Length: 323
Image (tube, rainbow, N blue to C red):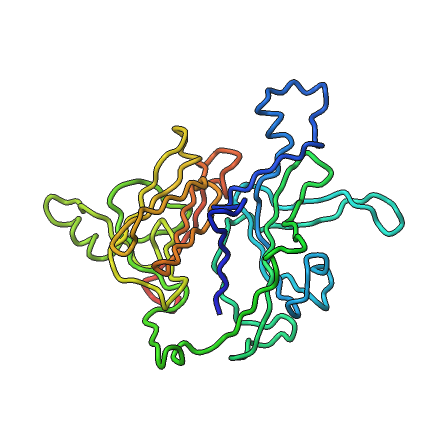
């Protein structure tokens, strides 16, 4: 069973761009800040998601810490160096204490999740049985006593547990065959650009062979499946549409750190534009063709924001496989 996290265009967190000021969070008077810096001081910005398996549809946000009713099964957050988030809260004895609200992975936002386990029983999911889940978005501001703020559940809110029922797809519409599985990746061809997206990549044998023939260069770089600088994967096997699709990265504010990307191609009616900065590593869903795209713009080695100082990985290949 696959869970997809998405926000419609009318949402205040569309494309993970939630930003809200706290009018009561003011900088100290001795801080000499510009008007824009004052706004940034008091502003909470989207930071991540938590997903809970809950016991039934009656569970609300206030009950998420009750392990008999809710279990956190998934967490992800934007890739920005922020891991732990704390709030100052009153203990039962009245003392104020630091409470850890999130210990994030800092690996980027994953918006497609494969669910195979019932976390209440510890067993695999059972076909044709109902399971209940609740997704919560949260925001962060480092300046206040409340660094962590999560989604608010209003009395008439649609933010209620949703139901998932695993079943075989072959039983749909009097017989449905899926020719792809969740997580499968297509072959990627690079037309132009540089970078590795923090991954070990490998070009295809056909590209290597082309580069060894006059004029001794490949006009296009084809990568081995699963070893391209960008991540494209199947999220909805029943909605994948064959065709050629193109991803184009564009700068915003003349700054590559805030770059976004466009997707267009055979079965996409209008060009899709994703403006959320690539540096945050957000998986963007394209449900109309059953895939997602995730691109990360990493900092250069040597910078304080660099992940592992640019180290990607290493492999050793022996002539004798028994060694």
